[in-house]
Length: 147
Image 1 (cartoon, rainbow, N blue to C red):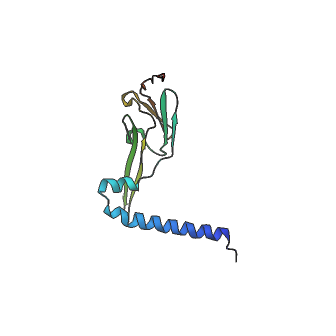
Image 2: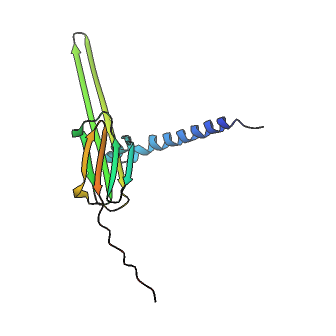
Image 3: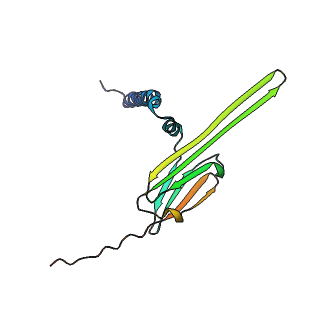
């Protein structure tokens, strides 16, 4: 009579997993190479905070070196991209080993207010990229009395 609530949740999870598998399995073939690459990158955990004078974005990029980070900012968007490829080969008598690894992160976000991209400051420490961007001056609204 009563279905186990957890069984219903498991069934829903299987359907969602199957849907994502279908989408990513066949959907990636139709994408151009650049979009395919970005779709396969992990999205870093991100915090976005807005204060009175600035926008602060923090991206968690574990295991990445500062030189591998690409940061692009416009007046209304921030984009972080990391690509790191590593290849090692070991050859000894009667033994051959080749390994490849790839670390990739990609995140593009719209910024809530308009910012001054040229005055942004970024620092990278302990796997966290922190970007501080000053907000653009907003035009002051004039309150008009209605007669």
